[in-house]
Amino acid sequence: MNLEQARQKLEKYGQLHVLDYYEGLTDEQKQELLKQIDETDFSVIRYAENPHGNQVRGKITPLGAMEISEIEKNKEHFTEAGLKALREQKIGAVLLAGGMGTRLGSDDPKCMYDIGITKPVYIMQRLIENLMDVVREAGVPVPLFIMTSDKNHEKTVSFMEEMDYFGYDKDMVRFFKQDMAPAVDYNGKVYMETKYRIATSPNGNGGWFLSMMKSGALDRAKELGVEWLNIFAVDNVLQRISDPCFVGATLESGCATGAKVVRKVTPDEKVGALCLEDGKPSIVEYYDMTPELLEAKDEKGQPAYNFGVILNYLFREKDLERIVNDVLPVHVVEKKIPYMDKDGNEVKPEEPNGYKFEQLAVDLVRELDTCLPYEVLREKEFAPIKNKTGIDSVESARELCKANGIEL
Ligand code: UTP
Image 1 (cartoon, rainbow, N blue to C red):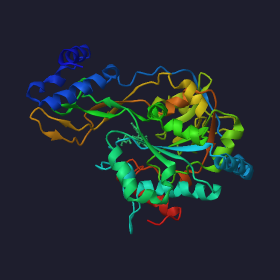
Image 2 (image 1 turned 90 degrees about the vertical axis):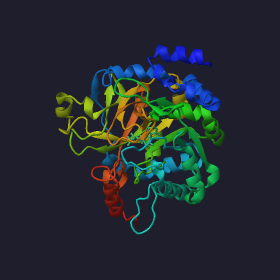
Image 3 (image 1 turned 60 degrees about the vertical axis):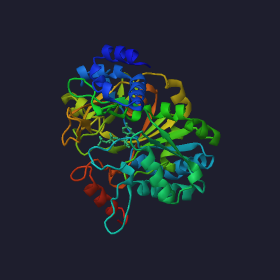
Image 4 (image 1 turned 135 degrees about the vertical axis):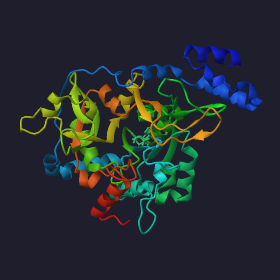
């Protein structure tokens, strides 16, 4: 792309300020900036005009879960079915680790965060240890795919190398990178990171399958015989990954998706709840819960939208290929965006200062026809680390780890 083409593209999206420093750049820097302008999808910026109103929701109705009592009755049977699939290498685990973890506020990727007290215990280590439990039970390694982004790829890979993959079979691990999106101020103007770089951030966890496909990681999965992909978040240090009982229950259910859920503490707890939307499985976010939905009861008199998702889903690979070109909604998220100020100084804001644009994995569930909500005990399986202190923090996760006999 030459300067004139760049100017035209930027003008179309109201972003001409990106070229403010152009004349003073070196030839190399000019080329870098032009390349980035060429590759950036500025069309998402229009969503900033109406940050909360981009998604038109359908009719929300309740979707019950397979509850713990029912799972317990069938535990042996489901576990055997799950172990069989794992031994046939039909299950791949996909770690979504491309996020910036801005709330935690560490400069390193979240997976490198040390939650130990008397010894180092890294978040990644906890995840690998949990996955190793399944590897030991099944007697075969589970292929592990790790999604990173431009912002944390190198550090994540070298950390894993340095830690010798925490004892995991290195040949069974494959990294792939997700895409980026521009980050803007509240007026919809892109921030500059430097005089020759637009500020970008990972474009949400919803594009994981497309990125896996584009990178060749999906081909590798298929070569190994993988038919189902278990995606999970980096920050839940009690996460059970490729859990045989969950795998077995989902496969036997005939559903295209399985979703681990926990019982909500209160109907208005800040987690997305599984539901049906126009008759299809979906997730209603806590901020979309109307008073009617909050008060609704099921036939047992329990709150009807009582099961919150914990970002642990099992997807049938074939179904994802079918829907890969469907356009997912773009969510406008308020975040802290580091940028360069008018005087050329780097600023790391303490408070949110603009918007990022994200597609979310939860929206994939809506594209598929059937989903098995599978209840797990939050005290045993849900210790998310979003913040340093308080709710969903390093502190709360440490308490939960200790309660589960994990030495820190
Ligand atoms: P979060 O919603 O917690 O986002 O991600 P985040 O960006 O990591 O953290 P904050 O909001 O800035 O503090 C949930 C999961 O999705 C992954 C994260 O790594 C985490 O496992 N994720 C998020 C991606 O893989 N890519 C993204 O673009 C965003």
